[in-house]
Length: 202
Image 1 (cartoon, helix red, strand yellow):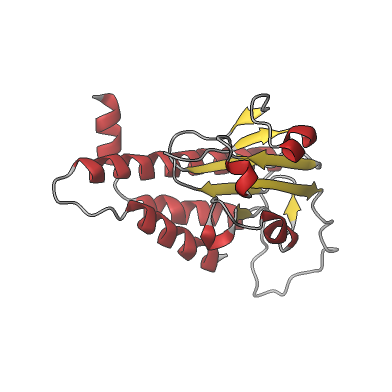
Image 2 (image 1 turned 90 degrees about the vertical axis):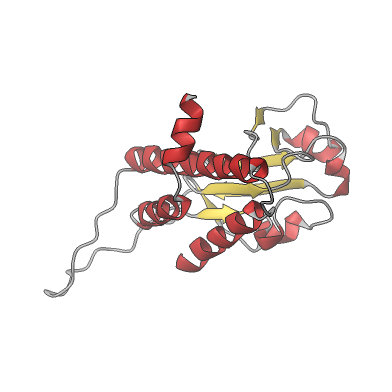
């Protein structure tokens, strides 16, 4: 009953998405949608996708995928190269099919999907670097407003809360949509469109 009540109160995921955008704009971090508009699926060259991105500490990854078929596991280099999913480090999947992961360290991260899908290309390796040093400060014009950045720890807490809440809201809406008679299966498309709006906003 508590979960149903919670879901009924959170009816506006777009509002949460806008809050996420504002939070991300207050800090020098980025949300990377893995695979772009193609998401986390077989037969996609994720090496090529990763080469087109720049990953820094405190950035985020978001995986869009069919939760009934795929998952996302963090593994070490050996298991990544051999598509082994038994000894994974972290199971990123939380059951929503729209899962996020924070890049907390400057290192190489390895991800794959279990169930043999790794052999179909569902594997990702990214190199994360320390953020570039900020440009030297210059006196702002009298008419401009000085921008202030949140401390990294505070920013991480805010963004984590917003992202997880957004994921819960979308999952709630997905459940309500599937239970409604005569409803159309449109939640994944809505989620994708909302994220595309977010990408354009950045």
